[in-house]
Length: 292
Image (tube, rainbow, N blue to C red; front, side):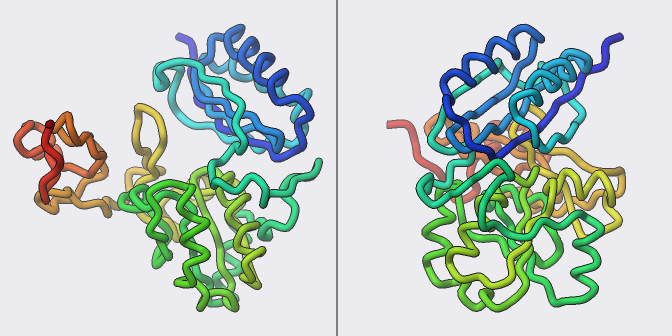
């Protein structure tokens, strides 16, 4: 029986002809029967793809011939976890809405935070009073986050610019701040935005939560489940994972997101199995828009 896997990787590096790279990546993905989402810009590539393990390895081997310094992470899953193969050119490979602020060279992002491997993070925490700063959308942190982390009130990545410029985090500018996100890519940009705005000691978790979880599972500083943007919706690093999420209707422990049953709403919220089982309770607890 064939083994299937999902690969996540990114690289920040100047891309002279993003459209040519898009055509090549689509052809390469189709050749190996992969599905997933691949974004390309003048600043690099960001990809999550699934398929048969050997096919994914062949795809990676070819991709590394162009993108020399890609950061690769593996996850359980397959091509079936994605609806199709999507390969697009965007202004940004992470949509902060600030393409003019990012500077990259052949070594990656210029002026970002200092990268910390998981074991280096533990060493820093032992030495200093560190502030964890969540670089994901706020709803992702409902089911998992680093202990005592600051979770900015952002619905999309594009909200981070106004959030940082609001002044509400200015008191952190003289403290050691560790940014973290799913696989590390959002923090590449976020940490550089923070440095530009006067945060004096900024770090980023190298490889993100995924790499940290691979090393420490649920015996470290992480609590809960990790939200992922495919059909799995979330994953746990071990059987010891805490359930920190709460059902939006009854408050029962859960890590399961569902869309509201109201077709005029469809808001993604946490629901326990019991509330999710009935369309009458699979609805926003505070009410939601009715179809006109």
